[in-house]
Amino acid sequence: MSLRNLSTFCFWQALLYCATAVGFFIINGFFTDFVGLVFTFFFIVGHACFFAGLFGIIAGLTGLIGPRTQTLVCWVGSCLISFFLAADWVVWAQYRFHIGLSLLQMFFGSAGREIFVFSTSMWLLVITVAVLIMALQAGILQLAKKFPISKKILFAAATTALVCFVCYNAMYAWGKFKLVPSIVAQPKVLPFAYPLSANRRLEKWGFVPNQTPYNLPRKGNLHYPLTPLLCSAEKPSRNILFLVVDSWRADMLNQEVMPLLSKWIKAPGMQVFTNHLSGGNSTAGGIFSLFYGLPHSYWDDFTAEHLPPLIISRALTLGYESGIFASSKLTSPTFHRNIFATIQNLRIGSEGDSSWQRDTDAVNDFEHFLDTRNINHPFFGFLFLDAPHGYSYPPQDKKFTPAKELNYLLLTNSTDPTPYLNEYKNAVYFTDRLLNRILEGLKQRGLLKNTVVIITADHGQELNDSHHNFWGHNGNFTDYQTQVPLIIYDPSRQKANQFTHRTTHYDIAPTILQEIYDCTNAPADYSLGKNLFDPTPRPFIVFAGHAEKAIRIGDSITILNEFGGINQYDSHLQPLATPPNPDIVKEGLKAFSRFYK
Image (cartoon, rainbow, N blue to C red; front, side, top):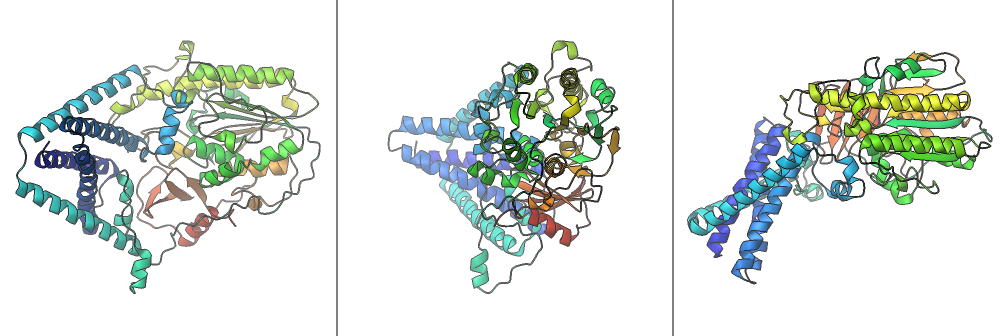
């Protein structure tokens, strides 16, 4: 290929990338103020042309090998980039984050088949899109060879691209320095967007930065707990059992969908918390907050040190026998390196071709554990069931119809969620039977009289409830994705009770440490929560996702992304015009750094 032919090919690639970038913004929404729109234009053109130019340089160097090699590199490389952008566009549409190394590791890891379940129709659509992309890129390549664009137009295009690239970086550097919301919130929309930041340089030049209470805290060395535990219990008699259901919505705990558990919660000792929130909208965030009483933002530090939560380390110190039974693999996310890092002979996953089969296998193994354990020691148990997450259930549990497998590639904001909701309900209906089986098994073995059972979920599951085209979880911090059931069976409490005050996953660890281990430390020594039975208001609740942090004050949710952008919503994802209390926001932000030296 001649330089002119290659430049023409890159010109068409740049236009294709620009069109794709517009698609990302259509999903996210445009900032309608003048400064925001100007930045959007420069950002789309400059960012897209930069990568098109980078690809052109790489392809040009391969011309030294030979023209055929260069042509092959152009076609294969452009196809791979288009494949990635198409996949990333789908991920962004569903979850509002981009494909990264952690997601790729999870997808191609040992648990990928269990986490990402694709229907036959979805695979057919993926193959069709891939064929169309390959045909499109082949057509562009032939067009560039036969009809090269004039040198004047190519020069003008390159100049425009360079101007846009410089302008969007300069505007972002200034916008970040002055904390202009319509600028600093935009880089997250496009993948691999890392524009220029020049705060220190601008300060040296005498410019004054904007002062705001919304600066994200810096990390330091981990300091957990803040003071050593002081606990009087030396020979606890009560077992502890966590029954956690992946993607279990709070509104599914009703007589229609879960008739068996709905009957159980009326029994003596059952404590039901009807206004309960997880600490995150993902499995990693939800389970982490459940055990540590801390947000997911601490994940990397605890994982690096293989530091378990206090409720487990204390249990092992007291001689509890552990029984950990997860349906999906505990290596993805890497719970075996933090929460369960000190559990010997950890059971990593379950057998089965589908989620409901693996759930059944986990329950079978748990029952075997109950029958073979050392009865002279209490046990600390954890069952993690996955059927609702995978919309998976045996044929006999198809109660709700019409039911249909999800094909995320075909979902839009106008898609009728009813068949997908029914599919989800059927999976929860099956889970109801498993939970009943576990509780009945404890009762028949005489273990309910001395076992505290915590029944909850890692996060919720949205089926476009907010009408913003969110399907699943890990996309926002609304009630649909963060509100979950919480049931505590405590044999020391004689009556069944319902509590309506707001509680969170952060409250679980303080409750266990105080109620079972008789620890006298203030919860603030090791957690962001309180005792569950403490009805005093929680002034704020924090959430941590993969790329965003959120502070919830009442029903107001303040979201802060990694680029410093700030958005304000209610619990149903409707924008709010009234800003939050800055003093409470400051306190909320301190929670993300409280346990660093």
